[in-house]
Structure formats: structure tokens, C-alpha cells
Amino acid sequence: MVERLELGDMVGDYRRWRLQLGQALDPRYHNQEWLDWMVMGGRAMCFSTGDCAVVAELRYYPSGAKDVFVICAAGDPIATRDVLAPRLEQWAKAEGCLAIMAESREAWIRLLSGVGWKLYKTAMRKDMCDG
Image (tube, rainbow, N blue to C red; front, side):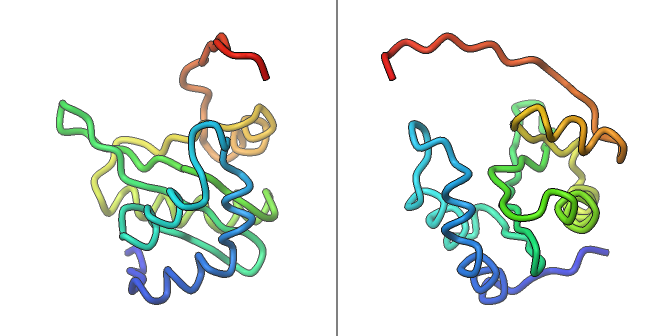
């Protein structure tokens, strides 16, 4: 069973990691204020330990399916894999999700592949602006 955090507990965890989590965002798309709005408004959950933190949300699809989607992570990657990934899995199962999704750098593929994560899609991108 997933331990449900009260908003006050989640906000306390978030405040501790707020700046590091914000730095993990691509500022062309998301900023600190948006992340604050997501967590403080209960639209996303912050999971943390003393060594790492993850912010994730539920994503809903037209078919009725849903996934846990990792927005950002900060801190020790090993602790994220060993401690927080299992907590995300518990939350996903409790919510009836099909999967947990994360868009990140290639190093996470190597780190998480040993605990059941698989590469799902390849994203291609062509920047349309200079800089």
C-alpha cells in the first residue's frame, strides 16, 4: 500500500528540494513558478528522501488509461532508482496506471534498465530557433 502524504508533508518535502528540482526543468518549456503551481496545487506529487527527490503527475489518456509521468528529479540517481522508483511503482499500481513514464537523458536508461525499465520510444526534435 502506498503511504499517502498529507499536502503539508508533501509541500515540506518539496520546499526542501524546490530549487534543485526547478533546475532540472528545461526553462524553454517550464519554469519554477509552474512547478510550484503543480505541486502546491496538488496537481503533482513530490516524493523524497534525504538524498533525492522526484516530482510526478498522473497523465490521463482519451482511452481512459493513465500513467505516472515523472516531471523532474534531483539528487542522487542511485537513491532515486533504489528508493524512489519503488515508491513511484506503488503509487502507479494503487492508481491503476499502465506504466510510469519519464523523459530524460540517456544515462537514466542504463541506470533504470536493471530494475525493469525499458526504452519505449525515441523522440526526434528539430529546433526552430537559434540558441
